[in-house]
Length: 422
Ligand code: ADP
Ligand code: ASP
Ligand code: MG
Image (cartoon, rainbow, N blue to C red; front, side, top):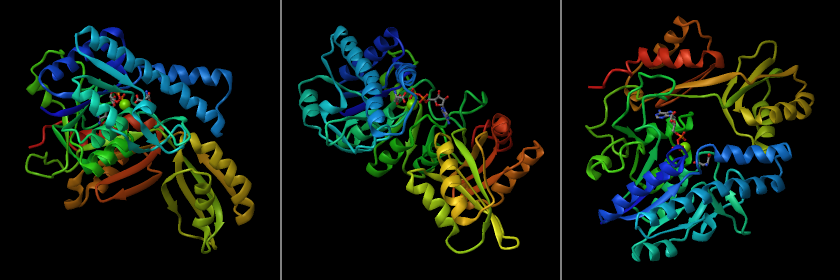
């Protein structure tokens, strides 16, 4: 008998029929003798629907008063789906109880809309499990020290599930979703994408941070920190498939680079439209420039990603970087108001129609020429590279967003990702 955590995404919880299927699947696992904790997302579209209602009443504002209510509102989506799942399980003859984050308690900091989990009290959950109940805990949310409901950022139910699995020292955390595992790239963009049987934790971390939304980045970080065995698999198989077959399906996020690991140099391609590029032109090339520009942006809680500073000419240089697209307007306004006059720079320009495409693979460590192959493939497609950033196991380029799908498809083919690895 093992303690297992299941997480079901929005599409998997998308209708009463799908919820009934989830209930049957969970009941099957419980009847096989496992202690079951289930973390559901809101029914698909519900979080967007709720947030759109708020914006109808008042345009988005960054202040805490507004963000607090957004969290109180969005958290109801998961409360509804959790209660519905408990009702469906009870109808299957399986004792079940649902809890919101604040009832568990899942404590977070007070950063509304992007809160971080600080602690999870497992007492109540363990008592219910010992009494033979399936315990359902809302994904995506917690409560801060002041008793305010918080949410963990879009896609945050993954993080709830992994954090709960870590707190309960679960045997495994299974992330059920609408695809049957982690693919070489998003199978909705490249139909030839191939499912990976295993992916290393480090590669998964890069893919998630570079835009593969199949797992929220924080969930992968938690899994790494607490060594939570993690698997991504489909909720769309027949609920009564053999449990052992189900338990070994999908993609395992592996902590060991062993001989079972696929041997490809590149494991996957990630992409993101979430960024925007900002350039400060004609800044004097003197010490402290980067700090003045990026420090001002950081002080406004805006994260910076790819950074480029050009060689100076006549004592002046250009400085470019990317920020999240949601922060773009705010960052440009800030730089125009504060940095431009203070530095005597010429101009602040920007482009929100860019995207970042990245190739990821631990094999890059031991192979040279991978980045240059990427640049060759893009040049053959006539795609101009605006920025480049590299690490040991990834190379990212910033390009015009209209070429995103073309770039991803061309790279997927050029690196043979549609061919099974030997
Ligand atoms: P859920 O609602 O279950 O959390 P998400 O929509 O958040 O599901 O994540 C699953 C989606 O992630 C898939 O439908 C797929 O389009 C997308 N995705 C992006 N990159 C990948 C990848 N490398 N492998 C699999 N799915 C991916
Ligand atoms: N319901 C939330 C969202 O749509 C959390 C999640 O699905 O993981 O972002
Ligand atoms: Mg998700």
